[in-house]
Length: 51
Length: 254
Image (cartoon, rainbow over all chains, first blue to last red; front, side):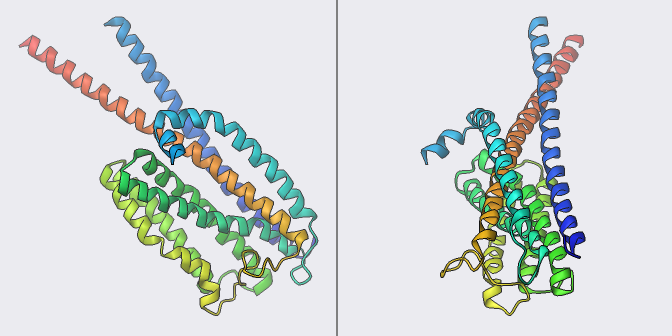
C-alpha cells in the first residue's frame, strides 16, 4: 500500500457503509410491512369467523 | 412493450420480484467478488500509484448516479402519460438509491482528489453539476415525503424530475464544454478507451456489479412501496368499517 492508504480505505469504507445502510433499511422496511400486512390478514380472518 | 404491460400490474410485479431477487442478488455477489479481486490485483497507475483503486468504486457510482436519474426520468413519463401507479413507485424509490450512489460518488471523488489534486473540493463544472444532481435527489425525496402518495404529489415529482433531467447532459459534457480539473472521459470515447486493459476489465465488472446491485435494491424497494400502499388501503378500509359500525350502533341506541 502507498502513503495514500487512508484515502483508499476511507473511500471503500464510506461505500460499504452507505450501501449497507441503504440495503438494511430496505430489508427492515420489508419485514415491517410483511408483519403489518400479516396482522391485517389475521384480523380479517378473525372478523370473518366472528361475523 | 409486452414485458412492460405484463409486469406493470403490481400483483404480477410482486410475483416477478419473488422469482428475480435471488438471481439478481446472486449475480451481484458474484460480480462484486470478481470485480473486487480485479480492483485489488490490477497494477497501480504509473502516475497515481495505488490511489487509482478508488476509481473502481468512484466511476461505477458516478455512472449509477446518472443511470438512476435516467430510470426516474423514464418512470416520470409513465406517471405523466399513463398515470401508472407502478411507474410512480419506480420513480419514488429510485430517488433514494440515486442519492446514495451520488453521495458515494461525491465522497470517493473528494477522497481521490485530496492526494491527486491537493484539495478535497473545487467548484469545477463536473463536481458542481454532480453536487446539483445530489441536491435534486434530496429535493425530490423531500417533495415525496411532504406530499405523501397523492396523485398530485406524484405529478409534481414527475415534472420536477423531467425539469432536473437537464443536469444529466451537463454532467456528461461538462468536461468537454469547460476547462475542468476533472479528467475527460476515458472509457466511453469515440476512439476507444484510453485506459489499460488490465485496469479496464475490473472497472467494467465493478460497473456491472453496481448496476445489478441497483436493480436488486430497486426491485426490493418497489416491492416495499406496493406493500406500503396495500397496507395504507387496508388501514383506510378498516377505519371506514369502524366508522360505519360506530354509526350503526349509535343509530340502534337512539
